[in-house]
Amino acid sequence: MASVIEQCQVAPPPGSAAELTLPLTYFDHMWLAFHRMRRLLFYKLPIFKPDFVQNIIPSLKDSLSLTLKHYTPLAGNVACPLNFSESPELRYVRGDSVSVTFFEINMDFKYLIGDYPRTAKDFYHFLPQLAEPKDAPGVQLAPLLAIQVTLFPNVGISIGFTNNHVAGDGATIVGFVRAWARLNKFGGHEQFLANEFIPFYDRSVIKDPYELGKLTWGEMKKHKLEMCDIVSPPDKVREDATREETDENVMEFFGCVADCRVQFNPPLPQSYFGNCLVGYVARIRHADLVGKEGFTMSVELIREAIRENMKDEEWILNGNWFKSYSTLDMNQSLSVAGSPKLDLYATDFGWGRPAKLEFVSIDTGSGISMSLSKSKDFDGDLEVGLSLSKTRMNAFAAIFTHGLSFL
Image (cartoon, rainbow, N blue to C red):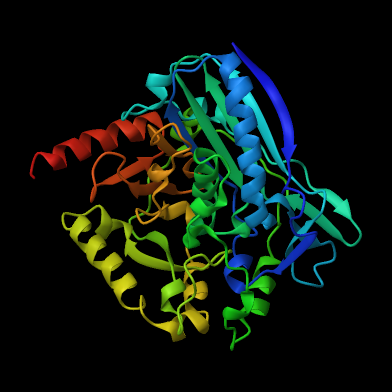
């Protein structure tokens, strides 16, 4: 059984900013052609529908509204010019809001939060879809955020987030989620919001001496910018049926991004609202990757790719990171989402720590993507998520287990 309890729009409270416009920087442009980000938090909470409707829903709506007073752009849209003559921008005007759906479902909660392979399609029941873009004079407006809260009667709750990456990176979105949780836990009292959860909006701190804004926007205009949120759960059967052997001379890529707020001089505030990520790419020939020393070679190449430029502000400003990342072949790549520095397991809405975090968006796109987060159980440990077809997952599990036997 599955049913919608309530669908509503939540706006910033009265007295908030009437409007807010943020220009996109060169850090934001590259995400215009990227798929939407989808995260899920699961909480163990033995509550039935009457209490959920009478207590949980009103509290979440009120605290979300208060949070949007601080994270106002997330209630707005990305405004993309129809003729591409100007750069897009984030735009909020009074009346904009976030779509929130409250849902009820009977599914095996214990299975969903398990630390073993599960069917990826099952998680799409708990994720919202962004509303369709709307036309406005000279621009198309596409929502930035949607939320779905799902009740598993007498077992737990999940909160699903879908956002357009152009609105902000993981630090920005995690800051929003944790701010909302704090306000909900402490009854909307804003004194419990630490400075780290108050966004910094001044985009003049992003220096652009080489006019990377024009360069990155020029590159993005060459792509078909899909403003609609297209939800495509993976077909694992199709992936296994069409997989072919890889040429040994094909290059394989490892791609990851890193927060570069601290690499500027002076450093940007950690609460800077937006994207501030640079990409690192390591390359290796397929034959070398699958060879006897493939793992060791890969680790060294990844280490060198990161270490060579991790403290180089000039490398960021001149756009070499963007040029390098734009050459990555996603069909032959392994990429990483998330970061152990962004602790979503510390997100307590008043129900305790989450029982499980899932980066569902690693299902999307070509190549292979994995998620990386801080462990929910032990400090210093990591939690890794991986989305593969059943055949590949079985092979990976066997290889991984075999590797552990040597530790």
